[in-house]
Length: 373
Image (cartoon, rainbow, N blue to C red; front, side, top):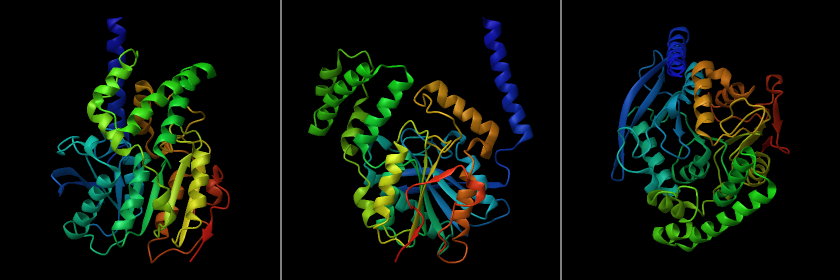
C-alpha cells in the first residue's frame, strides 16, 4: 500500500507542476502586499492590480465567508481576480483576524465588527493606496451577505454590492445546512427529525446566553465533538443575524447571485426574499439570479453534493486550481463582467444585465429586472 500512496502523492505533485507550467494562475495580475489597522488588529493582505497598472483606478473589495479564510481563499478567488483584472478592475483582500500574519481572532467578531473592518479597509484603499474617488464595489461571499449591506449603510460612495450565496437568517440557514448534510449522508427522515430536535435544544441554549460549561454538560453524551469555547461565543454573538432590515432601506445597486445546488443556503427561497425586499428598497436598481447548475460558490455542479466533507472541499479546490474560470457555472463570469461594465461611466440604468443569450443557464427569480427611483 505504501507504493500506492507514494504513487498518488507523485501524481498530485506532477499535476500541480503541470498546472503551474501550463496555466499560471497569476497571469495578468500584479499582487502587492498590504497591511492596515482596524481596532486592535493589524490585518495583512494583498492589492491585486491588472498587470501594468501602478495604482488602483476602480476596485472590488472582497469580503470573506465563515471560517479561517486567507487572502485568496486558498486560491478560490484567483479566477475572479483574473476576470476583474482583464476588465480593468483591481481587487483588495486580506487574511481574516487570526489567519496568516493578521492579528486577532475572527471568532471574537460580530457582523458589525466585520463591517467596521471592511470600512477600515475602504479608507485604507482610498486614502493610502490611491483609489481616491475611483469606482468601488464590495463582493461578499456567504456569511458576508450579513456584512456588506451594513458597510453600505455606514460608508459613502460605494458604487455597488455583489452578494454570492448570502443567507437571510442565521438560524434558518443553519437548519437548512444541517438537513442537507444529513440527506447527503443518507439519513432517513425520522433520523433527520431526531437530530434536528437535539439541535433545537442546543439552539435554545445559544439563544438563552448559556455558559460554555452548560453547553458541555448538555452535549457530553453526544458522539460528535463539541464546538470550541471561542466558536460557542462566536455563535452566541451572531445567531440573531438577519439581513432583512439592512436590505429594506438599502440604497446601493446590488447584484445577488445564488446557485440552485447550494448545500448551505436555500437558494430559491432566499433569492425570492431578496427580490421582495430589494423591490421596495430605495436603491436605483438590483438584479437577483439563481444559476441552475451551480453550488454555494457558483461552481458548476449537477447536484447538492456533500459539500460539508473535507474530501469534497479538497476536490473543489483542485478543480479551481486546474480549471480556473471554467470551474464556475455557465454564465457566472459573463454576468459578473456585464455588471462591472455598467459602472465604467457613471451609474448604470440598463435592466437587462445578465440576461443575454450567453446566460441561458440562468433562471431569473420572479421579475428581478427592475428600475426604480
